[in-house]
Image (cartoon, rainbow, N blue to C red; front, side, top):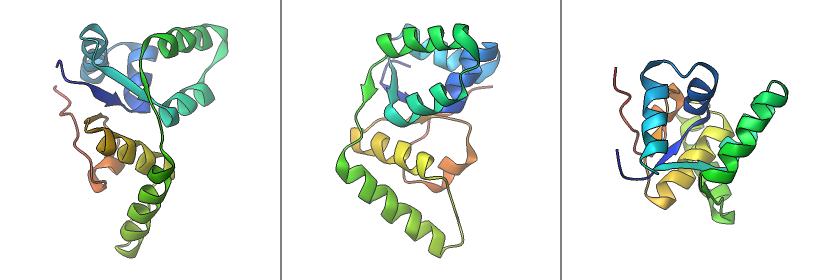
Length: 130
């Protein structure tokens, strides 16, 4: 796994909290390969869920060492259009997931996630190996 990948919040949590399992192993490999990417949405979600000073310190280290993809003003419009189109099909997804997928697609990078919401979004996903 040497190409850059945008790592979703659930994958970061698997890596940071337990460090166990295939998802955490893929995050570790991406970090070792210098392939891991964040975006502002995942950064905010991770901070929101931080439990205590130790986790906050881990996140500060992570944020200082993993590149963070910017959210462009056009990403908000694209995500909104995507969510509206899905809603007309009876599918309602979180704005955060649509925005992460939009940033990844614009940047041409796949997303590492096990979040089923991403199956409905127009983005390439990294297969999570067992």
